Amino acid sequence: MEANFFERVYAIARQIPEGRVTSYGAIAKALGTARSARMVGWAMNASHGRDDVPAHRVVNRIGVLSGKHHFDGTNLMQQLLENEGIKVVDNQIVDFDKHFWQPEINQQ
Image (tube, rainbow, N blue to C red; front, side):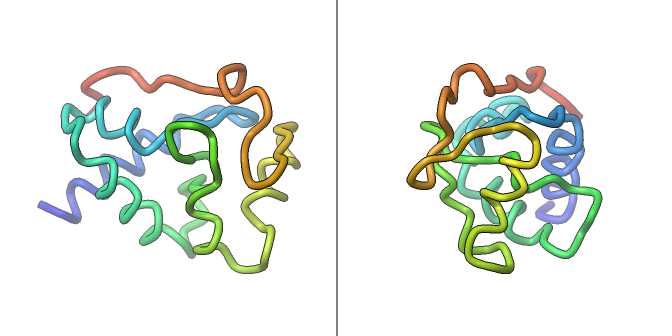
């Protein structure tokens, strides 16, 4: 179940457009498992080393880079987001609502 869940999470993460972000909870809700935001976070953590999963585009529900300590380098997550035109101040996305991408509900 866990591996399949992780792959479903990655399938949604791959759809996040460059310059946009979503939240762990939004992905969980889109999968029909609204209470599994933490499990989505575990999936994002497990994705490091996979170039096909843009984990840097997944943040917490208020736009904080809560997963940044899982990236190599002190500010790699922030640098990746800034390279896509997203401004980050004090580990939080500026204009979070403007950059937020809502996944379609019940993605497979």
